Length: 157
Image (tube, rainbow, N blue to C red; front, side, top):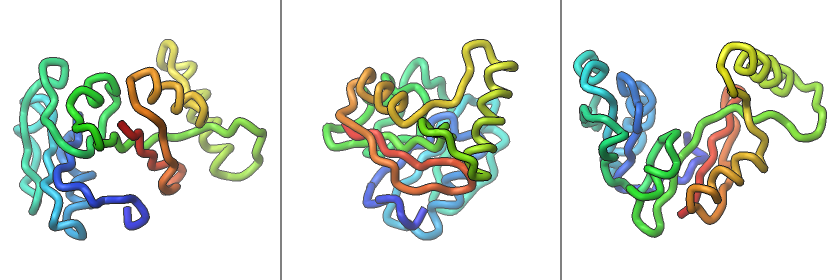
């Protein structure tokens, strides 16, 4: 996460599970207040991590405020963010132009699995992520870095 702009004061991981993602980020970013937000039956099993506060609630009822949010429900994230906030998205992205790289082949395989196992499921292209962001009220996106076949993107409010 060294390339990602982490000048945020409050980072919320909505649907963060046991808090592992935040536990990786917080040792190098002690200036960030990290909130791991998930359902009560998940949070009750979350181990303590330095710098991570576990909060149990339902994201469909409310989302904690923060200046950066990891989240899939972009409309709710947009509402919970201040004017200069952003959403951090970690997702696979399929190429628009055919590509034979190992990363592109892996993403296309994941896309096929999603299409066959999840009704309506599929990986998106950069333009599709931009359309999602704009549709939720964000002004744009930036691709920050590529890690383990996944893009780290920021949606800007």
